[in-house]
Length: 419
Image (cartoon, rainbow, N blue to C red; front, top):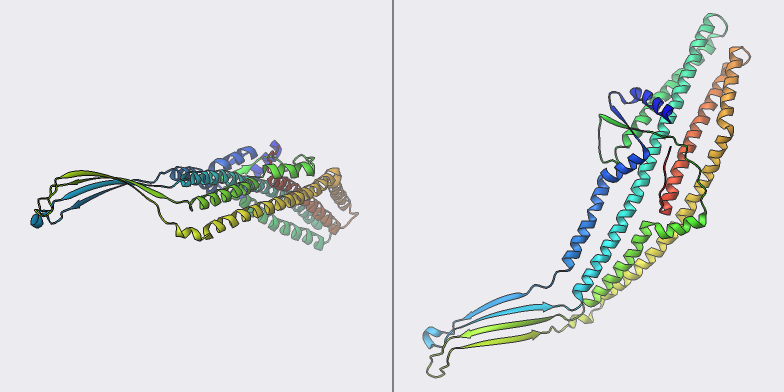
């Protein structure tokens, strides 16, 4: 791993100019994504928002205080004056508790959705990290190929001057070196872009700092059992937990809709003071009075069942969504499992000697060419084959690592790491 890191750091001056290079391990990168990703930080605010909604649901109905003054034409008819005050409050049996239960269920669903967001964020960040490692490996392949062909072209120029080969062969080797150099320039761009993309999950943009991933794409082949993966997915997948919580939210919303049909009632307490009535036809002394009352609305609107029916249908809808999500999760796990097993076999085939054989063929063709026993075209074909095998090996290692991430993402587990 140290040798690969030295190679990467040696290549970076060609790629990144004057940027400051910072190496970062896979585990540190994932942890920084957890801490710094801006969208995840925004999603985490949904938790205190849900807490605030619970506090809001706990509010009681406010009481009302009213005052009243009556003059009663006291100046002309001496009928006196009166003043009164009343305190009243509306009571809504069962509604406050139903609102609290709904808000708490919504918070539980919010927590599950936050976990599901990070499940996908972590997997996407891991694949971006592996993509950067892949591009560094591909760039190394192109650089090695360019050095090899460039040395061959220089040697052919000398051979042409010595009359050992034709001018056409010398020209062809120079052209091949030029073609590969253009590919090398494209590889520089791809590598730089892959390193720059690592900043996105970290929630930052910098033209001065470049993160350089360390490690190898060779991830140990894992032996999974499909039945266990399916069982873990149904148990651990945070989006399934969220879908299950959504059923509970829908049921709590249905309960609240039913409680909203309950009758509210107002209870009032009043006090009034009346001054003396000095009218000769109907005199009366001053006096104090107290009142107590209750007001019950006539809920003719309860005949309209639309709100309850809507909430009931949404509860059934949430259950259907959950069962559909279960089906999709199981299918996703199966597909990712099949892909992972196929890539494990492909990696094993490379480990059985494909790279060594391709290298041996190239070395043999170069040796024969230097002895004049084979043509330049055969050497160039062997070089292309060796480059393609190395590139395909790198692509296969990347696909294997990415498929492991996808499999664990779909299962709801996480123990991905690299050396």
